[in-house]
Length: 188
Image (cartoon, rainbow, N blue to C red; front, top):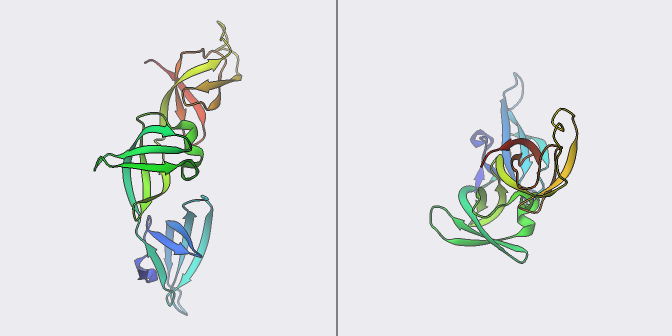
């Protein structure tokens, strides 16, 4: 479906050069002389590349209907992950390549938001923070909290992250999934 530049909004999907982009920001400009145009900041759904484009009033853009679905991770089978749609309870298999870096923090029963186009998952958005257990790290020592420094640790998903020196095996920690960084130790 084609749309005019007047119908551009934040969050809509556009097809540009056979790639799907989401509109992050837009700015309608009406100069005193000449025709109106729109400056748009777009983000590629698959590569996460951000670019800025200018569209004139005569341009027709291809609209891509995007839908967000709340899904729950059930289990992994080879290179695929099985998810359940929280609204319809239908199961869907998503290949590891679509999940990308999200695989590092994908826990069993974790609820995610999937961006879909015609029931095909294009991108997965993890919650901003997850609670994970440390499964492997060197032991911490009393007094290590006063000294700054980090050490490698493996969490229950198999991902390796840097944690403060006072963290021990079995501890539960809060992790920022955007940066992959340690936030705080939590009681569970």
